[in-house]
Image (cartoon, rainbow, N blue to C red; front, side):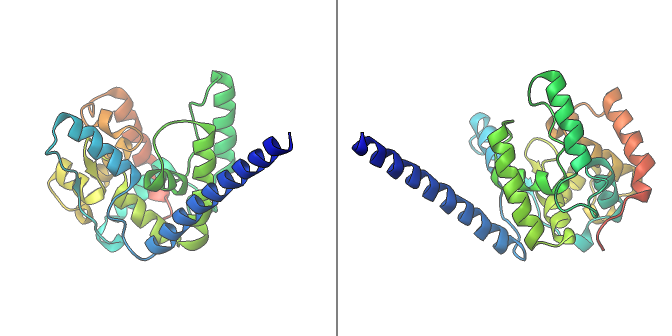
Length: 232
């Protein structure tokens, strides 16, 4: 019995050490990316692997652009669409989480997350797209790391440069070139709202931008984006 308990204690200690090392690895990346641009993300790598299953020569479309070279229209549209309280919260929208919990309880499974831009960024940088309570817990830890070391401006800058905007399309610049043949800096109000409307399900909306659901979402974003507060 004593030997079994020792083995159990050793196993628990080993697991704890591995988890701690993983968290430190993540935190080191968060600190580095506070002022260095990530060349890739977990979501990009997964997207590239998915594309290369069909075409081994496939490449992602992605070009980093600094915050000042992204249209104010797109910044406001994204905040209005994804996280209206972005400047006010510290990574988590409590009311949004409560609403998501109620929806999950009603459905009997995890169908909504109430995620902020900071949470979505944490997931994009390091995690998979699967829905689980363990993944949400890790997402929360990474969100705290990001919010404690990055400015809101940096969070939004990285978010706009790494999120998916269609199959193999990542970041505002690649998306603006793909859909409007112009740079992200020159997006007008309508174009920005249409791009922001794609974010929840970009690969589907890429080919269904005439759907009623998409048009309703665009109209909703255009109604509120004028009042959205974004970092300067």
